[in-house]
Image (cartoon, rainbow, N blue to C red; front, side, top):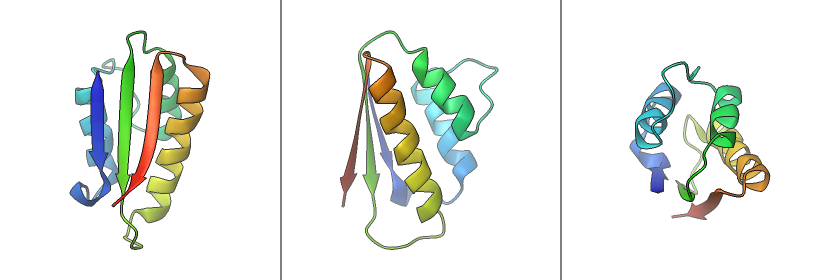
Length: 89
């Protein structure tokens, strides 16, 4: 599975969570927060790559996307079925 998150495509963190829930087929009980995301990413069992495409400018969600990037990297370190990459446009 391959999922791309373009930071520039989202104006609200809730929209990112909704996108990830759909793209990664997360369970209905997914809590739509970074702690819940980390838990759900730990349950992924098929090979999955998540690419986060970051913007170089400071947008309104820049700090939140920093935390999302950290969450993805922690999850990838802990789950051998998951890879994450952070790229800058």
